[in-house]
Length: 205
Image (cartoon, rainbow, N blue to C red; front, side, top):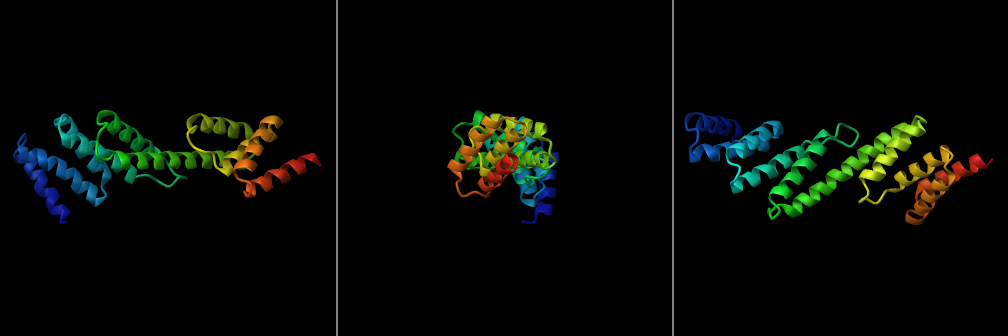
């Protein structure tokens, strides 16, 4: 676990014996060293180099998996930039496409699910931001985007509340009631049921 010394030695092998079987192994292990140190950008760089040099090897599959995992490890909180999340999804899908029988499939599907949920939470955060500013048209656009891109997820109670509330603010009463009824059916004890009922009562008065 002396990663700095390993990094130096592996780099020397690559420089002094390019093209050898040892350089091949060293290139892949150097990626692992950077990955173990948490230096994911350098790890990705080394794994990509390996795939370019040895694309038709079993180790190339492992390198692609580690590229995806490197981006996965770099994921930010849902309120921050989601580029690493999108990159993780992209590279997990490359892995599944190129190597459909890879031994990491179960883990990959779990990680993909987490990535999509993370993007969903991020999008909901942005949508809520516009809603709290009273920008209902902008909120509607964000909600339409979510409905289109997250069709396989069950919308949580906050999402259904925002849909009902925004359409109510925009005068689209029937759409608002449709989403409110879905909210009550799926989440009868949610605080958002009470919030929307208060909104309706307030408008009624």
